[in-house]
Length: 83
Image (cartoon, rainbow, N blue to C red; front, top):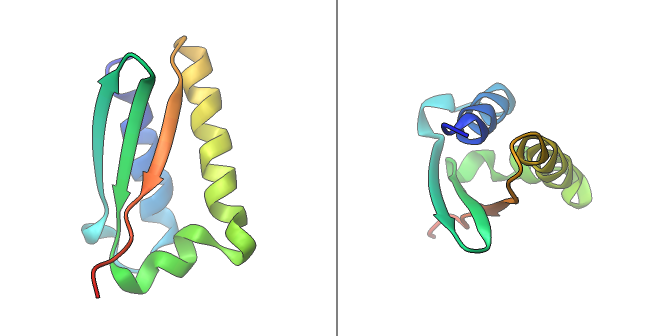
């Protein structure tokens, strides 16, 4: 897959947030599929999650489509900011 899913996620999230330089995506592959862990600036969490989690759900749906194109299961984990 050559990390197309990671590049896609970084691109989408950077367009949503006010601090695009703080966006970081970690990619891990195991027997369950691909796990993308997203970290953003704490001030941008609301924009990434959206009202009632709708933005996060939409991003997860898009990642599933990208994964299906490459026969991989892609999951998204959003890191909670440290307070």
